[in-house]
Image (tube, rainbow, N blue to C red; front, side, top):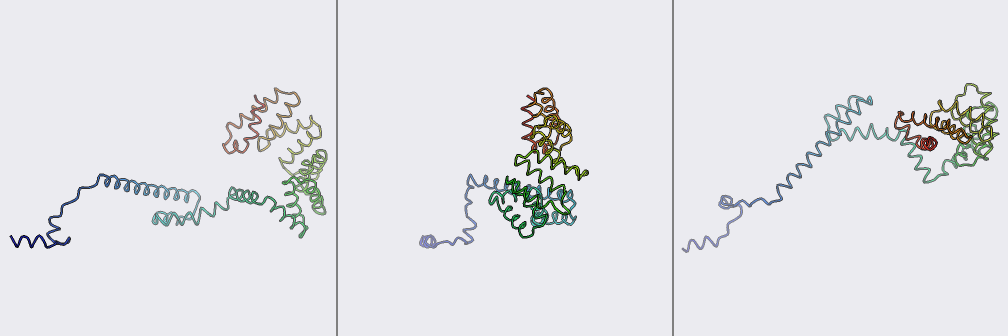
Length: 287
């Protein structure tokens, strides 16, 4: 009996063989299995996503004609390979794309809308050459400062550039913006006479608008009629329909508008998005 009491007073270490032999397993908590399943599901989802991204990048590499070494990098290095491909091949392309450049310019203009105007003004004052004056004049037109733009275009239209078609078109654009439709029409006629090979849908549309602006409705209708089916966009056809409608030719105006809308229905989606404002105007005319 004494020996038994002494044994009871002696603590048994947790790593003692007897303790390990007779240790009772604790029952699993109810949430342990569910947590393990959730961890397993997350790992599987991550694995599937990584394989999907890897496959998409390989397809992108092949379709865009990249170096085939990238295919092996993407296959053999599933973690670092996609990151390297995106950093080296995709991100630089995004910054070089026209969309990214337009976005960057838009953000810059939103922050400081007069930054380009100041820069082009300084260039025109310091350099004084034709290219610098043209950039400054174009920017003045964009800001609605038409009279100043007209002065810059006239200074640039000299010497070898006295009949330069782009400068003359810019001058006509500024003149029309300043409500001088007759002057714009005369400038465009001179442009066409001295540059018969100059093909510009914008110049011909501006000519039709100038004729309309000075009240030559019959001539304007004829110009719009020619442009309606050849202009790269919906603006010419809509302006033609609007002028027909204003001149009382309602049925013809609706026909032009409906023909335009029918063509737009089979056009690519990007065309419809880009021409949305003009197509909405055509729908109002079509009734």
